[in-house]
Structures are given as C-alpha cells and as structure tokens.
Image (cartoon, rainbow, N blue to C red):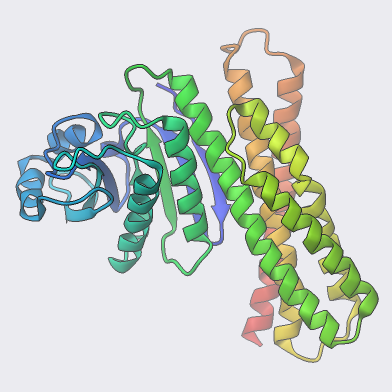
Amino acid sequence: MNTRIANYELNKTIFRVTYGDITQLKTEAIVSSDDNYLSMGGGVSMAISEAGGKAIREEARKYVPLKIGDVAVTSAGNLPAKYIFHAVTIDYTNMIYPYEDSIKAATLKCMQLADTLGVKSIAFPALGTGVGRFPFQLAADMMTRAIADYLMGDTHIELVTISLFPREGVKESDLNLFYESSVALASVSTQSKKLDALLSDLECMIRRMNMPQISSRFVELQTELQRSQVVLRQMPQSLEHLEQIQEQSRIVDISKRVVTLSSEVQNSTGWTERQHEAQPLQTRLGGLYTLLNIQVSNLNRSQIEKAKYGGQLVPPIYENSIGDAEKEIAKLQEQIIDVKKQLEALHST
C-alpha cells in the first residue's frame, strides 16, 4: 500500500491526501459512506463498523431512514476518533445512487458539522465510489473543491484528510492520481479566489490614496487573475492535464507579480493607519500561499513519476525537479513566516 502523504495549506488548515486504513488515523471525526438505512454492510462503512464495534451500528439505527445527502452523527465506539459522520450516498428507498450534487452536499454538511461540534480534524474516504460505484474522478473533483472552498471561510478545522484505499476495479495508481491532482488543483484554484479578493481590497485602498499608476497595475493583475480562474475550474484528467491547466492559467507568473507589487506598495507608501499597512502584507501573503501550493503540487507530481521506477534508473529530470521544488518550498515557507511576523507585530501594537 502506498504510504505517501501530500499536504496543502489553505488559510490556517492543512488539506491532506494519504493512503491506508481510515480507521487507524488519528482524527477527531471519521466520515463513513453509507446507504439511507445506515446498514454499514459494505465498503468503508463496514470497515468502520467492524473496527469500532456494534455500539456504532446500534446508535446509528436511531436515525434511519435518511435521505441521500444527509449526514448522521454517532460516537466512534472503539475507534480513537470522537465521532463518526455517516454520510448517505445511496438512497435505497427511492433507488437514488450517488450523483455530483449529492457528493458535494454530503461533503459540505460534514465540514459544517465538524465546526458545529468543535472538531479540529476530520478524515474522509472517497465518498460514493465503493458500493455506490460513483466515478472516482468525479468524486475527487466534487469533494476537493467543496472542501477547499469551505476552508477559505471562517473555520476552526485544522486538518482535513482524504484517506484512500484500494478498491475492486480501480488501480491504486489511478485513484491516487486523481485525488492528489484534484486536491492540488482545488487548493490552487481556491487560493486564487482569495487572492482576487485581497487584490480588490488593496486596489480600492490605493485608489482612495490617489495612486493611479499603481492602481492601474492592480486592475490589470485582477483581470488576468480572473481569466486564470476560468482555466483552473477545469477537471484534470491526468497528471499531464493538471500540468497543462496550471501552465495555461499562468497562475505562477500572476502570483509572483502579486507578491512583487504588494511589496512595492508596502515599501513605497507612508502608512498612517495599521489597518492600511496590513493590507499589502495580507495580499502578499495570499500570493505566497498560492505559490506554495503550486510548488507542493509540482513536488508531488515529480515524486509520483519517480515512484514508477521503483528506485531503479530514475531519470535525472525527476530527481532535479524534486530538488528544485523542495528548495522553492523552503524559500516560500521562510517568506510566509516573515510576513506573518510582520502582521503579528502590527496587531500587537
């Protein structure tokens, strides 16, 4: 079984893809994919029932029947988690099987429940792709975008994990590929939306301060960023397609220009209010986070390609790509820490 872990940073939350038994994860909430009677008779729900004990099944019976997209909460029995979130992905009463909106709705409800219950870590399986036979490519796209968009809002969740396990009829490499590439794309796409909002706020402030030349540069960047987001909304079909989407979006170049221009504004203007001084720092931080997730995506792609060779005669291009990405990630993390310190200093005075 693959033991890779891929981490992306969104706001203050880690968005992770890992591989293995979801019942063994150290997490406060585990999401189960089940039918509307919570029968826990197959796939991940059966694995959770067997590992957690009969108390989970008995508690779940109090909530049936449910409807597709509903989520019921029970204790976790013998599992190390606090809660099981039973997401209904099949409605046998009305013979409704998983579809795109139901996967998205169930994912969103689990995230909302986690915040309501004060849960700081939650782990998802690939919803609806086992007994429900929902295409894992679509599940990956629906789940990752719903989670990524939610994490850019007001949340106390610190870690979201998608835990993958081999399933009949699906190659492990294909499953890994689509979920990892989808998390990467969703993270970069959602971060770019946040960056768009930060750019808009900073441009408005600069306009009020009568700085037309700098303001026009921000308007130009915003227009390019919005075009980039249209490209980033595509669903990747492969690692190669993911790379094409990223290149076509020009998000790397745009993010670098945002970081540079925000730094110029910060250094060239005499700030009279702390709130105004924080705005270019926050915009710069948004650009750095976007670049960080892009580099993490690059690193993961290269590591996946390297793994195909089983450690034998690995082409230098992948070794070099991994080294370059690791250096860039370290540099970006240092810059992020520096900007955060500057923001903390502003807030503490």
